[in-house]
Amino acid sequence: MRSDPTSLALNTIILKEWQGENFRAVNQFYRRQKHKGSASGDERVFVIEHDSQIIAAVRLVPYEGYYWLRSLYVEQTQQGKKLGSQLLAYLDQHITQPIYCFPYLHLDHFYQQAGYQLIGEDKMPQSILQLYTRYNRKGQGILAMAKNTQ
Image (cartoon, rainbow, N blue to C red):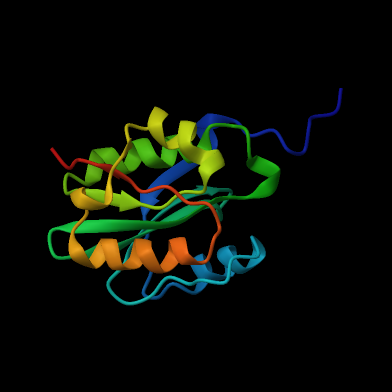
């Protein structure tokens, strides 16, 4: 009996905050996912590794007292295995500050299941509102969501 090359035993994954001296491996992962952005500076990056390879990652950009969640990606061959949900749950264990994000419309349910709530522009800090306005002007169909804001 052959094993499915896309299967993944959950006990073989490692969730962790990136502690490397640089973000080279993380940024190589993002490039493989065709993502234009890259991790840098004072961002906090959380990853899932399997066989010492990054298979999912998310970036948190720090602001004064809160974070902006960006670039949550799961390797295409590993999608549908709840890895993105596990990564967001792992964040919950390590981040108590408010987190804002601008997911695409079709990701509304995914983020709501992870505890994020839709927010109005009047509930956003000024710097996040400016980012949201800039991204929203591109017409890509995004939502404003947040967690830990109460």
